[in-house]
Length: 122
Image (cartoon, rainbow, N blue to C red; front, side):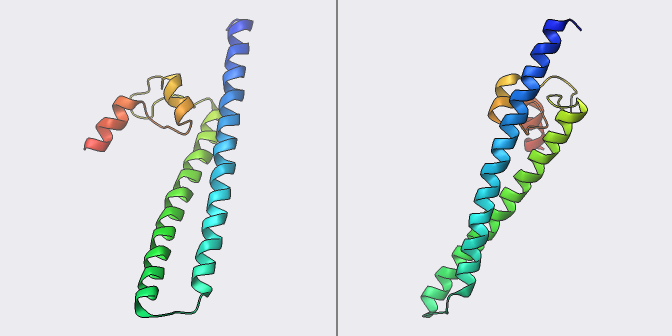
């Protein structure tokens, strides 16, 4: 590997490390807010039946969002591990290179678009 290529690789590693850290911070803030909202809803006195049903629906929605966000945090942490081991940017299905635009849009992506679409269809 030439010195120039090594520098470019280090720049990309830094870029994706920063993208992953920012995504992680954003999600942690969101999850903390969701946890606070759930606690606030749970602490409220049940009102009329309709209000209770609305509160239950809101709690259910927040719980689902929290689960999705926690899953995304797990994916970000896994991507950080792949970055450290040198497996970052390699499709886990076809072993091809995941294009930079996809990684910049979703740095925790495990698969290229083709393999992702194929997996979602099956």
